[in-house]
Amino acid sequence: MPEPRGELEYVNAFTLLVAVVLSAQATDTGVNKATRALFKAADTPQKMVALGEDRVRDHVKTIGLFRNKAKNVVLLSQRLIAEYGGEVPRSREALETLPGVGRKTANVVLNIAFDEPTIAVDTHLFRVANRIPLAPGKNPLAVELGLLKIIPKEFMRHAHHWLILHGRYVCKARRPECGKCVIADLCSSPERTTV
Image: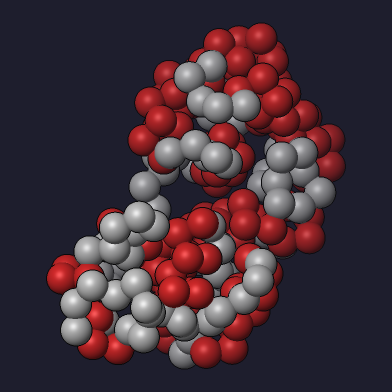
């Protein structure tokens, strides 16, 4: 996959940010179902604030933790308007000041919206990095820093997508599909089912 893509649907940097905030502890498929109508109604921070928390909540009620997420979406929209002229900031530090945005979310937005070579460590990537082991670590930050040290610069922009998709569809948590794995011969995991 020379140009891997995330599976969240979005129309601009703002809707990407909202989708990633909503995706915490939820599936991309579920988020996409909820955000299609939401993004038709509100694809800018100004429109999201005008929509209001109750109507945002109605759009995202099928997603886990929807009440808190709806509140954060409206709050981050207000902050974007007040502090960033309605634009999504291009720095991790600024993104992490927004409600509902942590390091992983900031890294996803920087990578996808702004083509920054970041590593967003989700549960799939964390598992793969520890299982193979590619960059073992006790927490997502340790895995991220380990990967940043070993991934060649020319692969950095797409590395997190390759690893996340590999973990989601091949190196699964319960039943890794080692027979489909392109690096099974390099894997030293005790969970490996093929040679």
